[in-house]
Image (cartoon, rainbow, N blue to C red):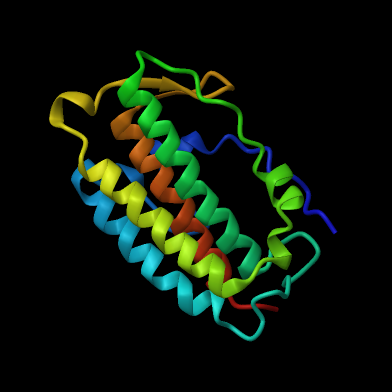
Length: 175
């Protein structure tokens, strides 16, 4: 059964602490992002090896496997957005409907071990791409399809929130 789509505009995490996961992007420096991405990714294989990896805690919440597949794809999408920002002047990012992707790609039916490997590889690639950004590139702009404006620096912090938040989601005690 599909989950109700998340329609929140999460760009506010750049200016405030997330009350759900504790992430505070204001305290994260650009240079810290690659290491934090890799550290977060290293925690996912254990979550994807859980006995309940395919179980949703309720009808409105993804399973750990679905969250893991989503986080893998977030790493991939953000790597693509970074590449665009470095190659083009103020590109507009293609829209990515994460909820449609979850359904179309059958996140809940994927192999958890494969998702874990792919998540680690995608996180490493994206972390390396952010680590390779030169100082004179951190202020390059890009626009999300809804018009939200980012710099390379703000995109990095915005991106980091997603895997941090979802790791907290899968670790949240079940009722």
